[in-house]
Length: 529
Ligand code: FAD
Ligand code: SIN
Image (cartoon, rainbow, N blue to C red; front, top):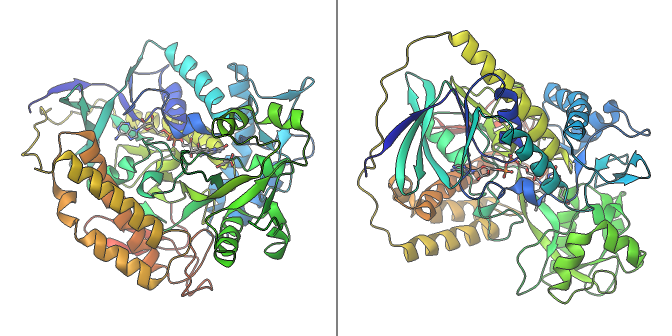
């Protein structure tokens, strides 16, 4: 399959909050191409429910948002990155409001809610539980106004193009054809990797592509063992793993075990609003203790009209499965939700590879440390998406008009002879292995067993595919392998990484794990980034 060549100033891979915000920064100055691998609106961003955390309420201060973020990150946050997030967050959110974002209000004042591990009400929300959709709507509308931005949907990025240690574009599968898109700088904003676990809140697009392609290109990845598991997703045989926002507990919902007993007070002083990793492990303990596959979320004591108005999307989705959240106990269990690790960047989105920038969930800015504070990722996508845009702009200005390497047409090498059913089988087994052996509670034995399973598919990582499911499988295997090896290296429990065989933090726990092709997985310092 021979392909074609295209050229732009900036290539942004990903059209969620981070990619769109980066594109908006670049669009007044240059030509930008934004790629999405599915419909433009299909992203984690569009599904975000609870809201966006920002220190804008009268009772809040950026310093308190900073402290809550660092406390949740359990000692591994990069403090300058957190400072940037909380200090710049308010101005970017006000800008979003000036572009038309409608956050819920009480009268004329913005309405803030609370989520786990926040010591103040600071979460802005929209239409109750459709915050991500609103942010995405506003950003897409804004991007549309720039004639300098081209958006390609169903454009699957296979790999980055790197010449002389510099990233100069990417190879993309579009309309069954390969295209090499050359750019002066590339911004990766491909989101997370939840799909490598069989239970996840993430949409189908979240297969870790950006992390895998950056790794293959020589970028450094950091802290890949830190996966956040959300405590409450709907547990119902015929339902998808639909998220039940933490904001529900913020508004007074409580967890009960299958005997109807509240249990969170036994696990943490903040009870139902304890940090996410604590609540998740407490639920697992209760499920084991009561030999059940779920616990319950209970909102029955809250005012029915308030619940319907505050959580309209959750209310109507649960009704489709005959659960009336105002009257019934809701069966819930945890699922993989967010990856704190990713492509290591500095405060301007720069990676170790010249010309390659990253922002959003694919990146590891160090903001989240070992455990993300709820509702900090939309804010991170906005703040660091914009910063990556500015950083890429400065990089290109410094490049001047320097010559470009010869452009080549892409050519797909001989493709793998794996049929679609084999691909699907591997994806399904991989996801179950990751959930069962590399999930909420890990140990040497489970991790080594996962390593063995992955080892049997090593050859797949080197295969070429001409279809998206196969290309995603290859990326999922790469990212899964990096998570397993990082989790094996960290012999201790910190934040969301919990090892039943090393329950304490372990030696040198403040160091970060790093991954790089040709070097494998190894220890970095305590101030990476
Ligand atoms: P995404 O929004 O996931 O966008 C990724 C983009 O990359 C997509 O456009 C996709 O098509 C594209 N892409 C991926 N791979 C390729 C490829 N190979 N080629 C081309 N394009 C590609 N966070 C909060 O702060 N508050 C919340 O309330 C909240 N609720 C959440 C609820 C759910 C159900 C989920 C799943 C997450 C939630 N999060 C929340 C987390 C937050 O939504 C995400 O971390 C954030 O939206 C990620 O944004 P992003 O721009 O990095 O990636
Ligand atoms: C939620 O609404 O519970 C998700 C919030 C988040 O992941 O930040």
